[in-house]
Amino acid sequence: MTSATIEASAPAKADAGVWTGRVLSTLAILFFLMDGGMKIVPPPQVPETMAALGWPTDLGTIRLLAVLSLGSVLLYAWPRTAVLGAVLLTAYLGGAIATHVRVGSPLFSHVLFGVYVGLILWGGLWLRDPRLRALFPIMR
Image (cartoon, rainbow, N blue to C red; front, side):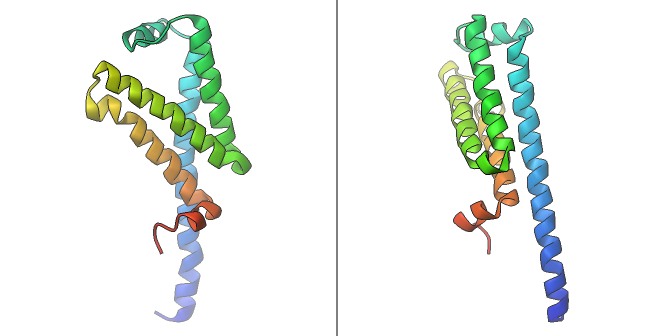
């Protein structure tokens, strides 16, 4: 390989990483929009599920969780506040993980689901934000 070939392939590799990060971030954003949207005007399954998990089923609590989720995802979607949004969404997912641990949910499908979403969330942000890659240089 000549040096010109190496230099030409480096931007293409960076562009592919950024686009992969955007796709992962979009998946996370869509998940949280669905989660928060279902709690704004909850179908009957939402209070039933919350009761099974030991959460209060009043509309105020359900909508408070919706506002926290939707507010955090809006921060995550805005590039300037994406890291703050990711931190807040990670805390939200931590609450979900703790809830599932407390009620004895299955490990890989329920308890670790928040970890999977968190990895997508942070992986997407890491790939699309050069400042975060500079702060955490995982691969060089």
